[in-house]
Length: 174
Image 1 (spheres, one colour):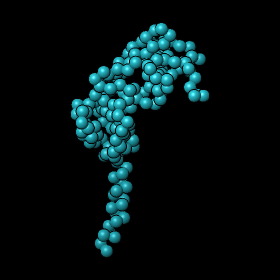
Image 2 (cartoon, one colour; image 1 turned 180 degrees about the vertical axis):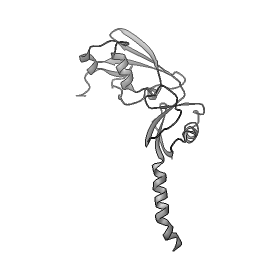
Image 3 (cartoon, one colour; image 1 turned 90 degrees about the vertical axis):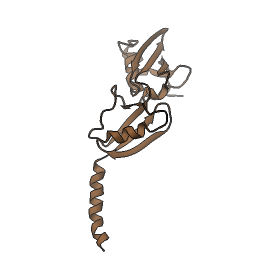
Image 4 (spheres, one colour; image 1 turned 45 degrees about the vertical axis):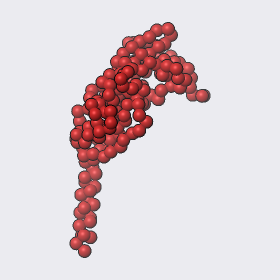
């Protein structure tokens, strides 16, 4: 009978504890596997232990999605997507119209951010109409990269680079 009296209190305590948990998605370099875990907020050590506990990633860098800096904390969030990568920077080479531009990005930079750079004044300086049609494709491929994916997913260690083509091809009709 005593256990029944404590169950509502335990449930309330568990719910309160749940509010302090954060859902972490860990993506690893070019691996299709995603590790999902729940940790206490601000428990960076738990994240690093899991991230660096994978064989070959013992000294890997951990980045928040679309961040240039290494992860230093989780903050006050409910969920966060992280990339575990052995490269600190990814050398991105983009070809378009007989020209080539290169720049280093964080492995956690999204394809969309790189596309914005490529079509902008520091890249190929496309007009607004052309920029709206632009996509990035891994050289030798025929499909555009998903714009919400981190570039490090296409660049493995030790090469730490990816070669892309900028295209204005319409992919909406296959």
